[in-house]
Length: 206
Figure 1: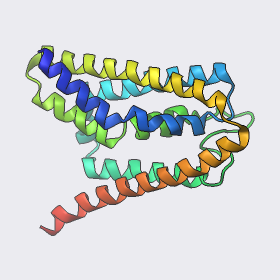
Figure 2 (figure 1 turned 135 degrees about the vertical axis):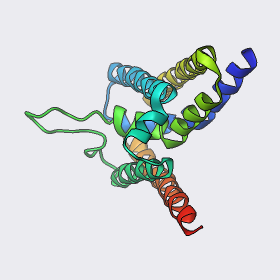
Figure 3 (figure 1 turned 180 degrees about the vertical axis):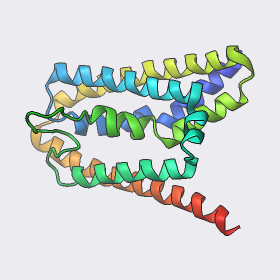
Figure 4 (figure 1 turned 30 degrees about the vertical axis):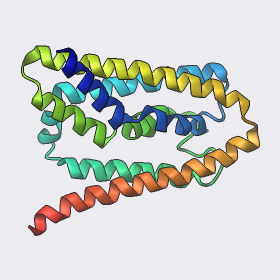
């Protein structure tokens, strides 16, 4: 059981890539103060855990219920990340980062698109569904959930550290970082989108 926990934790960590998400978190929270960044890190960690936990328990059933294939889900997630990257390339907080609308419920970019699909994205959800399919019985499924919880703790630590490090960046430095991260996100989203489309189309040709 310990070996299965280690394998599940390694798979969860690799598929969510919390280290790679930390710079993006810096860009999204550039306009926040220290307390808001801590709260954002906690929200991101909790929401990503809940998303992955649902994937472990009922992910395959939910996708099947709506007739959504994993490649289609991946392509949709890639499109969301592409849109996020395009806005970040503008170098100033936009609707993805900061919603100035009044009299309406504001969107939370920490939940979408940061927690999903950036952290708990198609790859992570697919990994959780695969691990659950391999699990035999509720005990093994509980181990997968524990591995997700452990990965969430690591994610929270990394995001809190990133928030602390951001205090060492000047405002102009954060703007440069924001543009660079926008380009990186654009590439990541394009890769996810094209990969999902390819997986969806190629089997149809065969």
